[in-house]
Structures are given as C-alpha cells and as structure tokens.
Image 1: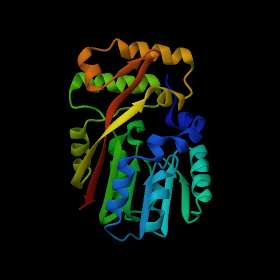
Image 2 (image 1 turned 135 degrees about the vertical axis):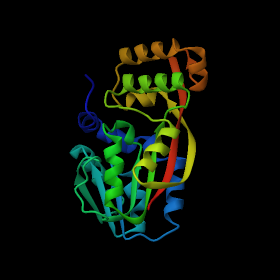
Image 3 (image 1 turned 60 degrees about the horizontal axis):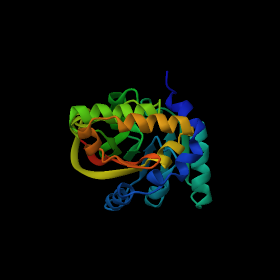
Length: 254
C-alpha cells in the first residue's frame, strides 16, 4: 500500500518548498496576472504545500488563509513566507475535502499542484464552491493526463510508481465536466507543457539509485506511441527527462 498524502508530504515537506516546479512556473506567473485584475477581501490557498501561491498572492488581500493537511508542510510554508517578510497569512491544518470555514467566507480560492492527490475530488470541488461568495473566483492549477486513454493510463501509472500518494491526474475534459457539475461556470483554461527532469523528480521523493533504475527501465519499455507522447528522452544513465501537461482553469461561482 502506498503512503497517504499526509505521510508523503510530512516526510518530504522541505523538498517541495525548494522544488523549481512548485516555486516557479508560467502557471504561477499567469495566476498572479489574472488575480491582479480585481480586488479581493479574502483569499484561501487550498493545499498550500510549500506556500508558493500564498506567497505570490499575499500582496492582494489582508485576509489570506493557507490550508494544508500536513502540519510539517504548514510549518515549512510558514517559515518560507516569514523569511520573505510575509506575516499576515493564517495557517490552518485541514483537508481540502472538509474545509473548516463558514459558507461564503472567501471571494478567491486557489488550488495548485495538489488535486491529483485528493481521494474525493467531487467533495473538494463542492467544499470550494461552498466557502466561496457569490461570483467568487476559483483557480485550479494541476497536472493533467492526456486525452488518449493509453497515454492517460501510462502517465498515471508512472506517477503512482514514483509517488504512492498519487491518486489520479484527470484529463482536461474531465476537469471541465467536474467543475461545472459542482456549480461553477468555467471561464478560461490555459494549458502548459510541463517538463520533468528525471533526477530532480525522483530525488524529491528520496528515491534510491535502485528505485531510479527500476523506474527508468519501466519507462524505457513503454510503447513507442506513449514514449513519443510523453517526450521521454534518455541518456547513458537511463531516462533523462519527459514532458507532461498542466492547466490553469478559471471558474466563477454562480
């Protein structure tokens, strides 16, 4: 049985603060540009992880709450933001599927690079809808699977082999459907190419050399069509890099 998200991120919290994939990225830049368009009274960063969203958006609201299931992650996020001089963020230990806030508490909600770990995405979306005020904005940023079923299955199996807390990266079409079923109106969706460097990607979860070799060999044996779709590149040591996709989806509460 794989690790739970709480166990996984408790063990590797610091690595997610320093990870370039989490700390930087075009998605984070575009998120800030979109958030700048309006004024907000209160912001919730759901599954804050290393605190990168809360840090980026802290200038746009005095009332900002960072939520995470893992106390170790909240501790490193708080230190990360405090070291940057950001001291007005409230940190709350809670599940994304069970947010401890009253209805319509926030007018902006963000969830970034986390939903693929959630057991119950429907409940997460319903909870996000509940805590947002009418016409509140919701930004979902996450890795997504390809629409092709074979590539979808291979990518999700790859993620699961590397991280036992991975549940599912959904297709773009599935996200649009699920978000709309929760009551939101989808306004925009940006799609990004997401490059992964194999060594960094496996180092972040403290893979041993043997584990890296086994995963690299498994990737090498994937069908050619899947390897092409994921742009798997190899060098003398095995897999060097591959590419996935991620999205930034903007939705409004009706």
